[in-house]
Image (tube, rainbow, N blue to C red; front, side, top):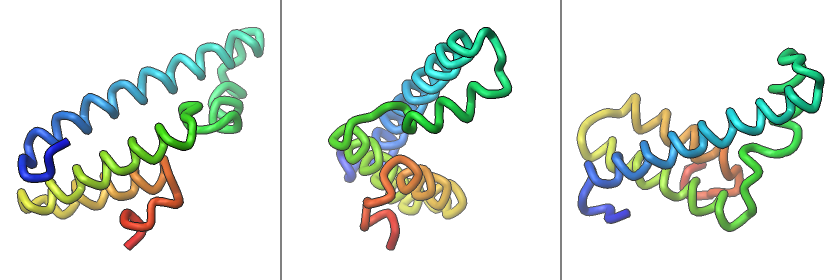
Amino acid sequence: VDAKRPKDALVACDQLQNSLSARLEKLEQDAAADDGGGRGNAAARASAIGLYRLDAVSARAASQAFQLASDAEKSLGSQENARARLERAVEIDPTNVRALE
């Protein structure tokens, strides 16, 4: 993601978000199937096995993408969206120091 092209950074981050959302939905469906179809327990089980089941390198990269998208949002004057993207970056990788600043 090129930080000098804010709109490209936002499009790439939106695509990443769609991919992560689809992955989480699949994990929840699998957990529900394992639970005999009981959706009540599925979300808790999906989050308990790790957000999206990303390895450390992928989690760091995804978090950095959201953090760069936050910078892009700021450059476009959208502070609220910038904050939401930073929160997402920290949710994915709580050790992303730059997102925590």
